Image (cartoon, rainbow over the protein chains, first blue to last red):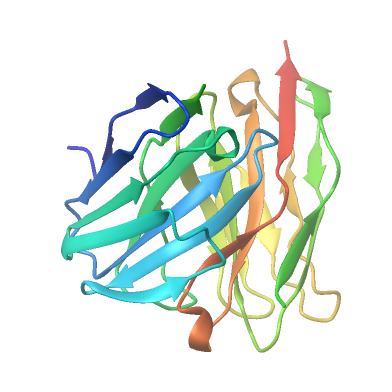
Length: 114
Length: 114
């Protein structure tokens, strides 16, 4: 059983398009995250939700909008895609929001903007 | 702000060699420390963690000790295998208003040859 799943796994699109990435976790966790991994493998937090409430909103262009319909799902919508948005986007979840809780990662969504 | 510095890679070793990947951190308070591993084309998996000073995390022959006095969390393994080839990330999670977000080092690519 997949603990944290993401769809789609690959996404190739043109500049200017709007796209969404979906994430679901079946671990019963309260907290979910979005991270971006750039071409040099560097990972950076984008957003986090705890029980459907936004708790982390890093410096991310407002073309990126997360939505959490329930605590098992966290989606990421990107408007007006730019070349620089090409990256791997990882969803993660943890039991609670806080230091010692382990985060479990999804397999990633590889986004390529042409 | 919080930060993590890992030794520069890539690291190339022969099978059965000893491995050390250095990791130092800067954080306010008492963060939890993690090592994550990313195999080619996959998401991140927790390798080990330590949540307080002098704790030792261990898993699959890997070990790391939380050293508060040197703000370090170096990853070690006595005898690497070809299957250990992956990217290794050191990360910290501070408490308080960071809400458990992970701050990652830049990653170290490890290649093990037969």
